[in-house]
Every structure is written in C-alpha cells, then in structure tokens.
Image (cartoon, rainbow, N blue to C red; front, side, top):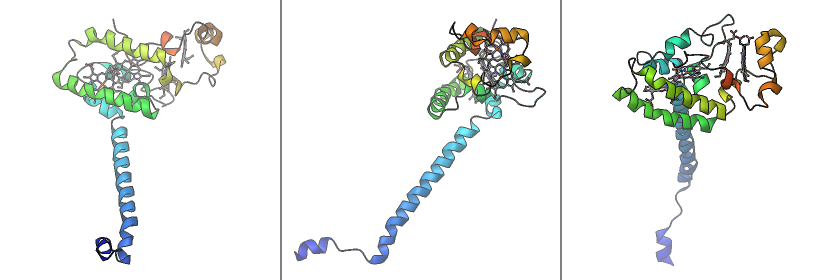
Length: 186
Ligand code: HEC
Ligand code: HEC
Ligand code: HEC
Ligand code: HEC
C-alpha cells in the first residue's frame, strides 16, 4: 500500500489553479487563431488584393472600373469578391482553397496581356456554368426580385423579368446578363 501511495500524491492545493489556467490559455490561443484566420479571410477579399495580380496581367479590373458595378449615381457598388467569392462559410473556404492554385499561375505567368483574350472564353464559360448551377446566388445577394419595382424598370426589363417567362424555362439572371462587369469574350 505504501508503495502505491508514494506514486501518486495529491498536488498541493495551489496547483489546482493551473487546471483552469490551462483552460484559459487554450481559450486565448483559440481566440487568437480565430482572429488571425478571420483577418486572412478578410484581407483576401478586398479589391486591393485582387488588383495586386489582375492589374497588368489581364484587363478585367479596368473593365470593372468602367462599369455600373464600380460606380453609379447611388454610390452603391459591388466588389470583386461580392460576385466571385460566396458569402456562405463552406463554399467560401472551397473557393479560397481553389484560388491558391492561382498563386502558381501568377508566378509562372500563365495568363498575360498578350494571351488573355485566348484564355478568356474558357474562364467565362466556367463562371457562367457555376452561376447557372447555383441560380446566380452572387447576384441575388444584392438584387432581390421580391423587392424590385417592375414599374420603375424599362419595358424590356419588365417583359423579361416576368417570372413566368423565365422561371418556367429554367433561366436565371446570368443566362440574360453576361458581361455586367467585364467585356464579353470574343
Ligand atoms: C496571386 C495572384 C492572384 C490574386 C491575388 C488574385 N488572382 Fe484571380 N487569378 C489569378 C490568375 C493567375 C488567374 C488565371 C488562372 C489560371 O491561369 O488558371 C486568375 C483567375 C481568376 C478568375 C477566373 C478563373 C476562375 O478561377 O474563376 C477569377 C474570377 C478571379 N481570378 C478572381 C479573383 C478575385 C475576385 C480576386 C480577389 C479576391 C483574385 N482573383 C485575386 C491570380 C490572382
Ligand atoms: C454587391 C451588390 C451587387 C452584386 C453582387 C451584383 N450587383 Fe448588379 N448592381 C448593383 C448595383 C449597386 C447596381 C447599380 C445600380 C445603379 O445604377 O444605380 C447594379 C446594376 C446592375 C445592372 C444594371 C446596370 C448594368 O450594368 O447593366 C444589372 C443588369 C445587374 N446589376 C446585374 C447583376 C448580375 C447579373 C449580377 C451577378 C453576376 C449582379 N448584378 C451582382 C449591385 C450588385
Ligand atoms: C430572360 C432574360 C432575363 C432574365 C432571366 C433576367 N433579366 Fe434582368 N433584364 C433583362 C432585360 C432584357 C433587361 C433590360 C435591359 C435594357 O433595357 O437594356 C434587364 C434589366 C435588368 C436590370 C436593370 C433594370 C433597369 O431597368 O435599370 C437589372 C438590375 C436586372 N435586369 C437584374 C436581373 C437579375 C438580378 C436577374 C435574376 C434574378 C435578372 N435580371 C434576370 C433580361 C433578363
Ligand atoms: C457584378 C459582378 C462582378 C464583379 C463586381 C466582378 N466580376 Fe469578374 N466576372 C463576373 C462574371 C459574370 C464573369 C463571367 C464573364 C462575364 O459575364 O463577363 C466574370 C469574369 C471574370 C474573369 C474571367 C475572365 C472574363 O472576363 O471572363 C476574371 C479573371 C474576373 N471576372 C475577375 C474579376 C475581378 C478581379 C474583379 C474586380 C476587379 C471582378 N471580376 C469583378 C462578374 C463580376
């Protein structure tokens, strides 16, 4: 009995404090990691971040800056991320993870001002497919058809926005509205 007892002695009382202390430390480290993660997620969603690579290698930034989605009479604008990065947590993570491949392409110069037009078609097609498959989710975060006033829209828009006209055909925003921020591929 004396032998077993010598293996385990209750620690002095003050050491019990270390247990909650460990808990607080773990919590603190978790908070710092979470803040860092959010910081990275945020920093990689700014226009400046996108400009860093897309100015000088293609012409999408300049075209966006000439569009109504960059500036208009209301001063309400869409950022690159608003249209290209999902808001929902998991799809956002997937998009960001996939985009890390672009770092490689940027470094080796896969796309440049000379060959951009010849690659543009494939990239646009992929984006259109994606938007058609998610019912133009990105567009709908700002444009909500349950809130627009048809009477204030042009006659052409009113005719086309009649839901029975397009929902029955399985159409979505991107089927009619391409090139809303960039020139269309040739
Ligand atoms: C590290 C450089 C870099 C940064 C930063 C960057 N891109 Fe790109 N991006 C590229 C390259 C290079 C390509 C061409 C991809 C390829 O060659 O496959 C590309 C392609 C794209 C495409 C078309 C193909 C696709 O994957 O859908 C979109 C859309 C795009 N980028 C949007 C953005 C947005 C939005 C941002 C900012 C949140 C951004 N990019 C930031 C380098 C970058
Ligand atoms: C971050 C919010 C936001 C997102 C996301 C967004 N838009 Fe817009 N959209 C706007 C604003 C703001 C205007 C300008 C309204 C004005 O001119 O007063 C606009 C204007 C438009 C116009 C009319 C002007 C033009 O360029 O022809 C169309 C069409 C349009 N958006 C379609 C789309 C489509 C399609 C998508 C998805 C690919 C989309 N929008 C995504 C906010 C957004
Ligand atoms: C069947 C084709 C079609 C579909 C689908 C469609 N639109 Fe349109 N939209 C149009 C046409 C045509 C116009 C008028 C363009 C013009 O007058 O130059 C228009 C105009 C607009 C405008 C500008 C309104 C104005 O009067 O200034 C916005 C914003 C817009 N659409 C957003 C959307 C969004 C968001 C969706 C998806 C929820 C969508 N549209 C679905 C065809 C469509
Ligand atoms: C209003 C939504 C919207 C905004 C804002 C927007 N894009 Fe796009 N982007 C699109 C759509 C839709 C396409 C698919 C082609 C098309 O319809 O123009 C596209 C295509 C692209 C492509 C593929 C090449 C091409 O032209 O098809 C790249 C690269 C790209 N965008 C990057 C960016 C960057 C970088 C920004 C910010 C400077 C940005 N986009 C802002 C909607 C947007």
